[in-house]
Length: 210
Length: 210
DNA sequence: TAGATTGTTAATCGATTAACAATC
DNA sequence: TAGATTGTTAATCGATTAACAATC
Image (cartoon, rainbow over all chains, first blue to last red; front, top):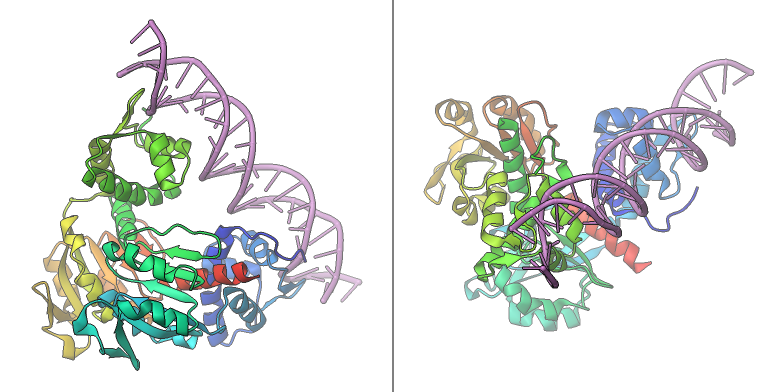
């Protein structure tokens, strides 16, 4: 029952996947699961599953396995789901809008409370009741609202422009722009490079062909 | 100059990032770079950079470093850029459409040649000259066109429905649906779980706050 | 109780880093 | 040539897997 000190980031990155599988089991009405069964489903070793869970203190019971609902809730807690995180989206092109329109975030406690762009044609356009505002309003908005996460879906050129306005005022950046943002103290960053992923796929295909 | 046998997937996943940085250096007119300089820029060790490149045979020269353009082109080659990969997008909701509309893929040799959905309202809607077709046409399309990559941007429920039509007819799947697709022989798969990434961010924020 | 399965320690494996001889 | 920097081998570090005692 050694509770977490420093959990490795590879473990943290595996948690959402556990969360998904456990959600499916829960919907299927499954009450308990052993690390062995789960390992078969998820294509990982049972050892790894037990090690991973034990980074956070052990959620199972010898001879029984894991209670699906309990485990699901614990992981949900660790992931910060249902904490009620406020998000803004900067850059309301197609990608930004598709994120804005994705209903499941709200269900999990991620609320979009602001949309920003600097194309005047988009000002006032609304998604789920939230209107697009000019980027020039961003700083004021951050001073008057509590924002946890900024989602950056604008062209890389605009990043330098908005970054100073954002830093220190949000806890995390979910960055889809092609400008990499380094993590720094007090600021969590997830850089998502969709084209990197396509190139990785392309590379895999190339090596398969040989 | 030990040429690649089995390159580890962690190395392959790093290649697109090298490619991005080298592209920037190239645009900036930089002719040569040492692993040490690059390591400072990219926040990795020079050792790792040299090890990584040497998986593919070594692209540098002692005492000089690496020629930026040459290295860029070599990595581009390994990644399969400009090979002219044909892609189709299945599911033309907002996310699918935002991928369809992203201009840079074409520039790198990834051509979107088909869009599919089963919402009749979208039939005939076109992006960059490609019209949305009914999913029922998918199988016929795959038989009459050479398609390398299928991009899945539909709801998880529809995946089982289209997967049989696709398997064996494409080389890779770029999967954005929430249904995980296992890799199998002769089929490369990249599962992209955007919400996993948001949850990882949320988790990082939570651990920062403690 | 006997059987099952966890939590946890120890062994293995792989990836990263350090070091240095080769060489441009 | 002397200096720089690679390619590559060896050392270290961390992550994964195996094993098993604890215990439900």
